[in-house]
Image (tube, rainbow, N blue to C red; front, side, top):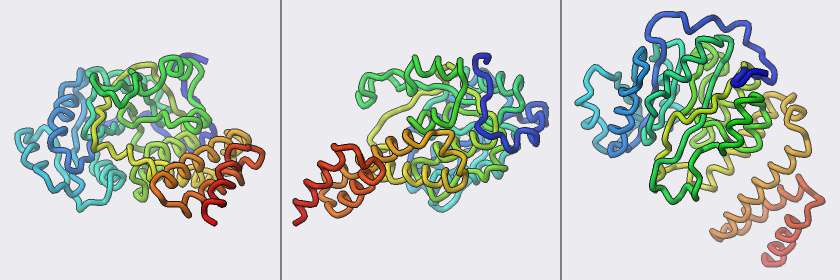
Length: 324
């Protein structure tokens, strides 16, 4: 298999994809959903406008901001399209942006992150040569000086990144660890519409959910390149562990409900182990925040999934005794 080659678990719609890269201008629609990020937004927009690739439109969707977002956008004038909606979450804002997009390919950017200069050029260069791909994505890095990255320099470990580029992306790769960041992705608008776009009930795990559906329906490719910088700050919603874990579990259960074949693609043992671990992490966080009954319910789910794992039984028995 060639580096960066497209791999699909069960390509249901590949044949319906046309050579979108050859369609009308603009080639790409960049969609930025934002909510109260006026202090980060200008640098993000500038990083997009300063791309080496120029054949794109920029759409900024204001998700009901109450800060001075509109004011900081005024100097950009016609260089971007501004849309406003009452606060409905990033998923709803992204869907609104795509509905107004004219590009054959969609690139999402978070309003607090930075596109590197070769971001669009690298992704579009691959997409035009492989128009059957529904999505191509790459790596990113942590912006300098962010201690919360715990010493990591890239979103995806360097060795893992090279392996993905060489062997291709499988469903199990996304399941083992949420490696997909849409800030480093280019998605066929046609494919995006066919899978139903973003799930608007999700606040954090919408990237993983969309990635699952793309992999189950279309070919997906990976490039071993760093194409965006992730800026860590106190406002990152992904740091809400309770919401992140509960949505992660929700997305996994949704995957198996919509695509029963996914169980075999991932493997039942790995499925039980990873899902049980997520419940265990959820239980520990709830116990730490004194949500004792909710913690006990979560640890019971972990032991149900892995009945032979003593560690989970230890916590369940210990917490049951404490409750008495």
